[in-house]
Image 1 (cartoon, helix red, strand yellow):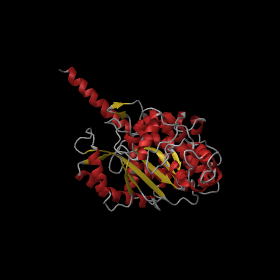
Image 2 (cartoon, helix red, strand yellow):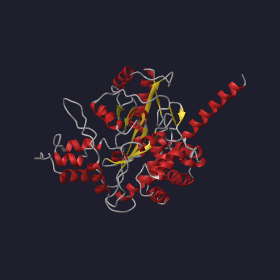
Image 3 (cartoon, one colour):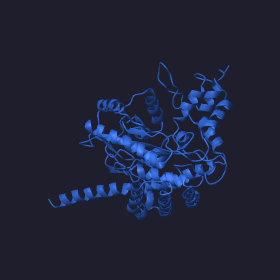
Image 4 (cartoon, helix red, strand yellow):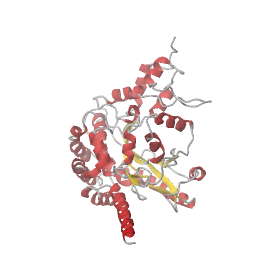
Length: 425
């Protein structure tokens, strides 16, 4: 006889409905920034796990406002608190980085903004039960899981879900905007064209890695009129990655969905806390966590490279005129995307491979960045932030380029110089 679950399927579905989209006027903004950690003198020299553990202990003693964590491959992440303005968010994270970077350098460590590690193969340094179970789970799908866990880094922008009612800032429209604009952001900020020193054929290798993982937890949910119902169904039908245990491995039976776990109560009845934890193991390109978490942007180079994607995204979501223009700009991209979910549909694949060399994505990016630039003064952005967005627009977007193109140019130039040197001998 089946064991009765701790909570019923209907109760857990209602719980998801209540927590996934917290609606109201868009007022808050947040950012989560990851960096690849490397030896400050020689980035191509892998950092030993003991050095990373020492660094983690030292950094956690700093008086930071943001949450500091390390990812499985040793990537450093700063997660801001929800801010009431773009300016507050930028100033808070900038102040934290002013403490973190010197502390890292004092330990002989640097922080690099690349979407995918350009130097080293994936190597896991954290051995928590969660990551042991995650690695075993993703190994069923090939090598992409280890690359995602240990060799990728991103800038994740968090925006409010929007109003309950339909309209300019309505939840349904912002949900749709995020999935179409996401391809434009992927292309504009593509910054991971190499792996282990070699071009991969993509401007954002990180996005390709994500597209090769378990589709039940990394593809976008169906784009339906009611995002809450679609998300709740997606969560319950996703395979369980791990079942937490006090005294053993966290492995889950292969193929077990959360819905099946609730219905059977095997290997033990799940709880609401298990469901909340299960949600943290789902990685679609836009993840509802009360707010909308946009997860598609590669980590950016430079001390303040993260500011530009944060500012552009905030402007296009939270300024009334800019969000109206952005929605009109990206709405036609739905025809290119087709019925397949991101990031496996044609639109997102073109963003990953060609970035802004794709004419349709280039046209959309030029128009979206123009709308964002006009909106930033209305959001109270500082002259420095506006100048950074303008410089990025002129250097990349207007020219149909992205940061990945700089890396490829440097790589090909170095190869050409090497060949020229050999020919002259």
